[in-house]
Length: 171
Image 1 (spheres, rainbow, N blue to C red):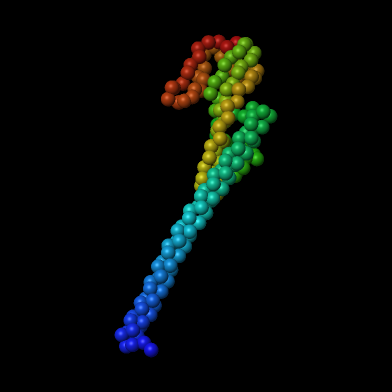
Image 2 (image 1 turned 120 degrees about the vertical axis):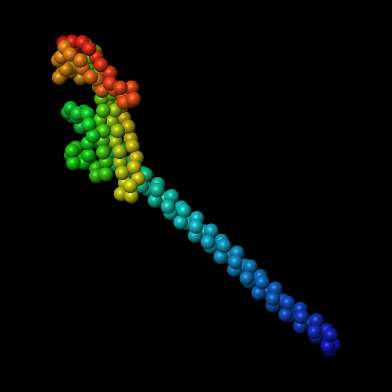
């Protein structure tokens, strides 16, 4: 048989074991709560990164499609300098614009010229993400529409350099 003092010591240890068990359960719960919060935050961040990546890819493919269409239109006929949208260039995907700019016109001989053109296509996804694609096209073509003895203003790039002037009779 246990003495009265031994029973009291045994009760104190049993009571402390219960307190330690509660403390361990509390700390484990707190640790699991923190890990769950960190996991949730990481999942949300990954989801947002996936959406941004998807929207960027969509804008890129829209711009690339617009560039391909403008290159086909340029090859098929004479596409003038300017900015085009789906309403002004048939077949252009919605959410895109194309800008065609002749950056250099060089007379090779009395009948031929070489044109350097820059095409900039911009695609915008449904969420507003925008991407630009650029191409430079160098083509030789018959000299037409420039029969003058006066000043010809050749469009230059960048605009900060100002316009370039060629003074001669190109006939």
